[in-house]
Length: 572
Image 1 (tube, rainbow, N blue to C red):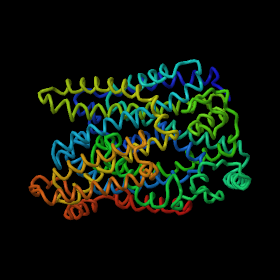
Image 2 (image 1 turned 30 degrees about the horizontal axis):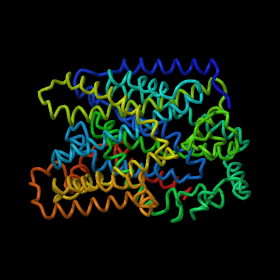
Image 3 (image 1 turned 60 degrees about the horizontal axis):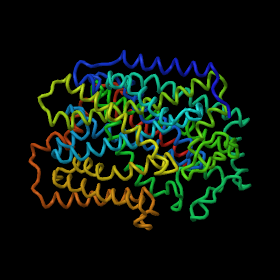
Image 4 (image 1 turned 120 degrees about the vertical axis):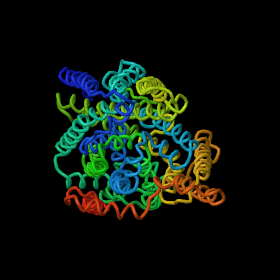
């Protein structure tokens, strides 16, 4: 497996130095609003690209390619369903978020309920930011750089990456994060397109050639499905089934019921309630720019199957039996990885080093590190916002804007250390990076989604109902995690993680409704500005009449849905 030439190293060095300098130059530090929300001046292209870049992080790149290699192409369901969620988010939730001028999602929960819900959600979000987004991105960066510099300690690599991302996040705030994300998103898309092109070149044909060779491999048994067969799980019979987005009930990755229930649940949390993502839209200059930006991000999600998942399938065809024992890459059991099927998380790096020519390799590796830095810097900023606005400001309300900014910078530094310490535990939790990411979200999101949905669409939802459902839902989720770690309940452990998410959601909704009905109803004044009313739709319709069709987000949403339906229908 090839390494980096001097030209590649120069490209990477220039990029990393340049992006840090550029990020610092775009900093806004005049007030807490400037630091945490970029002064609320972001236009729709910036908002959309920043959303896409923060979502398609290095961990997502590696995770999508890995699942493509394992024929889990239906992972694309998470991507296209984001379009549906973002449209729902733009119609119902975003107007309330922007009009309320909140800094954080937990702050919005306090406005609708009370402080108890705010503190609970804020704490859970901070833990999730460290364990999921930041640590996973550092993990991916450490994989790539460990392959390039095998003599360097993983600890040194992880600390170096964390410091690089924090270098412009700490002084610059959200504006620095978003401005650098725009550059990184463009580089990331170009790199993914180049990788797909060179993979097809290596194959010696286009789409049909890929499907034909995949059929031959499946017919000859060249694809190892031993684990799936032993567990009675679904095995695709041909290339059409590999690319089918709807799988039978015994599919171990995403059965059809998971697409209908689990994917919307996780997607709604990620795009509509997650501080990590929503903070980009909170920085929009007005409601229209926020909506257009969210729809633009949805549009950018659609080509992901071609430039980020298909390369994983091509790696299965091209490098399934490639000997990579020379990498000395350790498996969780202590043995060394012999071929790609042993360690599918290496799919994306193997594609890079096997296919890309000198110069281009350096550019794409820089793009991968850019995605990692983008995700890490984004989570640093969102988590420091939560700590500062939901805890520090509440405990010390007399602090000035400059003091709050300083508190956010210190919080970011602490998060750098915590995330770096957690990275070594990722492979101990799951051998699949994408599985790790989704499983953690599945355990944390259902109670939160329940609180947001009921709070927005049910006026009778009370603060006690929200808090008790969050608390009990969190306790049940913790028991599920402990059951996995200590093997308390084999039956529960064997249950699909999306089913566990559904159970948690039902428990949370039922508790919320029951407790709300037996406690005093909230006053009309307390819910006036935080629950959806039919009159709002009518008022908005009058406002939209003054806009040309191409600025009417409702028309744009319909066009985007049609485009999504055509793409999904092709792979159905």
